[in-house]
Length: 169
Image (cartoon, rainbow, N blue to C red; front, side, top):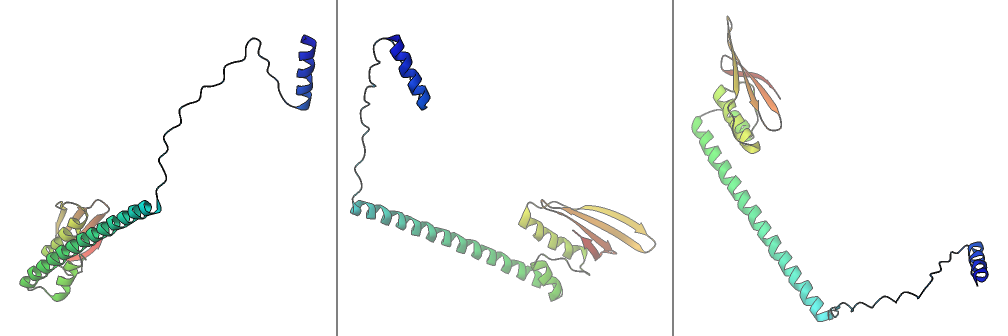
């Protein structure tokens, strides 16, 4: 019997397979697991109802998003109108007023105008932080360097006798 088993193993190995013999009784077959409860497939009507409900929710969400954007745009427009009326009361040249509204610096701005511009520029990025002011007094007058540190970059403003003469960022 052992010779027969060895011969079978040899044949199986030569053919490229592998044989495994277990002495004793064969193991019991695996017990079957109770089948999981499979939900019945949706009917076409149920599927369509679900798709219609999802589409309605999407339309509702899009309507909310649109309304929020409109409210934000109205708020920005109101703020800009208030800024514009505030600037009109200053009597500053229109060019300077527009630069401030656009959050842009311009040569010839006074310290007050440049500061107003920078405060508006900073409020777009983060909280307002006062500039560091380095002052030099000489025979030609007062020279100041204002340093504004934003989250994304640093601005250096240079004033001669209270007038903005240059800046870098």
